[in-house]
Amino acid sequence: MQTRFSFGGDEHLLCECSEEMSFEAFFKAINSVEQIRKSNTQGILEVCGGNAAYLVKFDPDLIHPEQLLETVKELEIKALSSAPVIRTRIIEVPVYYDDPWTKETMHVFRDRHQEPSMTDLEYAAKLNGLASVEDFISAHHGSPWFVSQVGFVCGVPWLYQLVSRENQIEVPKYVRPRTDTPRHTIGHGGCFAAIYAVRGAGGYQMFGITPMPIFEPDNKFTYFNGEMVFSKPGDIFKFKPIEKDEFKEIELAVDKDEFEPLIKQVEFNLDDFLKDIDGYNRNLIKELYAN
Amino acid sequence: MQIEVLESGLAVSIQDLGRIGFYRYGIPMGGAMDRESLKIANLLVGNEETAACFEAPFLGPKLRFKDHRQIAVTGGEVSVKVDSTEFRSWESITVEAGSVVEFGFIESGARLYISVSGGLNVPIVLNSRSTYTVGALGGFKGRMLQAGDLIPLTEAPIQVKEKNRRLPSDFVRNIDDNTDIRVLPGLYWHRLTQESGESFFKDTWTVATEADRMGYRFGGGNKIDFVERKQPFGAGSDPWNIVDSAYPYGSIQIPGGTEPIVLHRDAVSGGGYFQVGAVISSDMDIIGQLQPNKEVNFVKVTMEEALAARKNKNARMDEIRQILL
Image 1 (tube, rainbow over the protein chains, first blue to last red):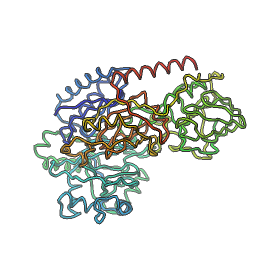
Image 2: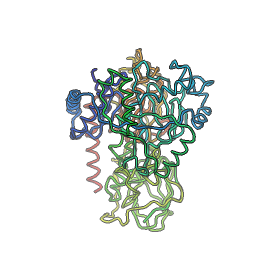
Image 3: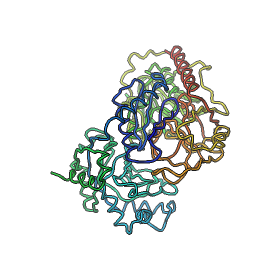
Image 4: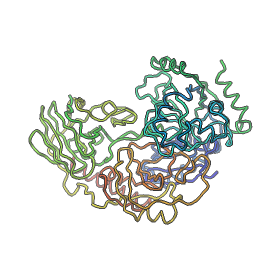
């Protein structure tokens, strides 16, 4: 896997680890980002991780682009020498699938969808060869997901499921983007899930909604640990299906800052994971629910 | 000390030079769309270059001052009325306590920068006073100005050397009828066919109505054709899709191959559209001053030319500082 480097104007360097999405490309990107940040290279202003790429923002008054390119290449080689292991956290994220709010929005924008006669869930189930919406929902929350990129607006996490490529859920985006999406919608486009951090435009298929905020500019919630954005690249999310009553309960608890998501620290070893995906996931989930 | 907003103007926000270091969370740099004009506005009233100002697309707000201040307006040509006396942009103007300031419609460019001696004293959020409306953060309550708002000012303009300053007219930027925007091709340039790569730079493009702090959209050029390929896993089925990635500020995406979009200060930090390259840093201020229907040409440059342009722009700013300090 050879990274492709290309300048985006005189202030950015794009480093595309791979054209296609894979766990290997994601690990190469996340470890390179870490290595570049740690290097504290003068002139590098910020490093943004992508799903299978990373972007270096630099000040060409402080470092010449050619010098920067050499430095980044060296740091990437250094990053590759370490084992593909990360210390991270696994987080249980409650999801109310097939909820009334995303359904209502879906109906408003039916004319922008590939299959106006089907719901987004029915369409996704059919495309991914699953017999029913229930089977699709089970597949969606059955295996955990990596936060493979954070951004878009206000800390939206992109999520890539911890399953083999044949089992990845894939759906196209809406034919034309919607002008509205409820806050906290669980969406899906291409091979990525996403959680809409704020209400707004969007093109991802809508499957459900979480009562758990992931963006809070006023620092109101203890579980954000003083951050404005909850998600971090490398986090592992495990969705937990909930119904309306539990959704309402959590929403009330969130308002009073009494909601505390279930979070455990874990180690993720890519080589071990790839050897036995199902077994590795069972252990991850066991660690999440262990006392 | 504060300023009372009597009329809101059009989408007026408070901006400084923005925030760096939060793009990786999807919080954009923000800050003035025309950074040079914001710096000049501040220098004209004796502020630090980085002080927060009003950024007003096309039409400024109507403001009542509660104490004696100096103001300056930059970015475009405009008439400034202080009570019944008329002034122009690019000079310092003294405003007495109780005076009302209003603005005519912008006569050139697209955004006015209005500085007030001492600076606008809204809270600093993530290292900046810039408004980011999507995240409802920064600026005044995270939103555009509304009539009735009371905008806090820095208590006393201590150390502000009050004198009449004016930017010499040969330093006032002139946006031509047909504006050149310099672009470094790259990023996913290889997705274009050779013909489309040529037409992109040959065609004249027109600023579309969807042009805001997030990005500027252009129309009128030839449709872009793509090199055929089997789409990579995870990229989505359309030829302009890529595996979602991080977007550079200034990068040019062309969804559907029809309308290029240049991402600006409030850019979304990532997504799944390919990009043909990026506008060089020294031309981003110009984009912030383009009115809808304005014709532009994208001009291909090398990295060396981009760096030379940057050096020229820095030197010009140094000269301006010498004159105004």
